[in-house]
Amino acid sequence: MSIGLNIFDTSFGNLEKGKLYCVCCTSHVKRINLLAQVSICLLAQHKGIAIVALDYNKPDMVKELKEAYRALEITTTEKLSLWVEYQPITTYSQIQDTLQRIIYRGKNVIDVLLIDNLIKIRTDFHCAKADMCIAANLYLLKMLATEYKIPIIAFAELYPDKALRMPLADSEYIDKMVIFHTPKEKVQEPIRYNAKVFSTSHKMTRTIQREIPFSLQVGEEIINNYRL
Image (cartoon, rainbow, N blue to C red; front, side, top):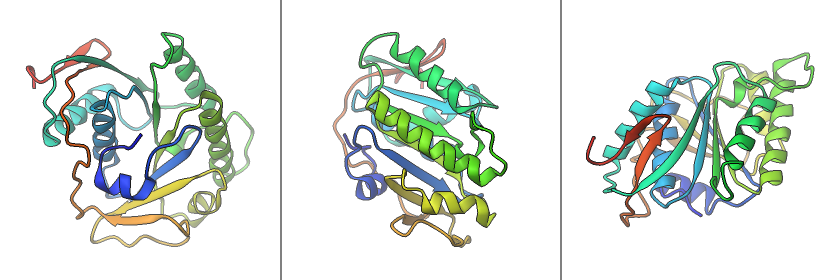
């Protein structure tokens, strides 16, 4: 499956089961905008997704999903559900529990798992340093993608701290990465040697234009083209 957005499809190609993809953003890039656009484009292809958000609460996430829905000009009417889990403080085991709860609702209800913010996930292991925690979670997320046979897209803030960028640059468990920065920002080293780097001045356009009807349900709130 492809995401349906030009930059991501050029960088990632088709999303493959068991693969871990990373979207890193410098501090002035609004990751929630990218997260919402990726979510809407996947849903427009009738792909089941789950979002685990650490930095954004449910009202903010719903607002951004509505904005992305409008901006991408998707005409929809048929119902399709979306699971949004808000965990301001989370661990890897909580993410796994969330995934299990979704999957137990029915087979093949989830095609892609989206996670934000990778840097803030607490590992279940004792790690003396933050960079070791990030490295451990990359391994665990890769194992989660393999176990459930789904692609995982992990969003992360690219902190100025070199030690926190190092595991993202070196990890063998990341299959592909894109990095976004504002035109006034410079992406500091180290970064992954094969990462694709884009400025937010690049226009995000859809690569899949067909209209597939759905409405969006987030918790008890239903979002559809009539109520937007």
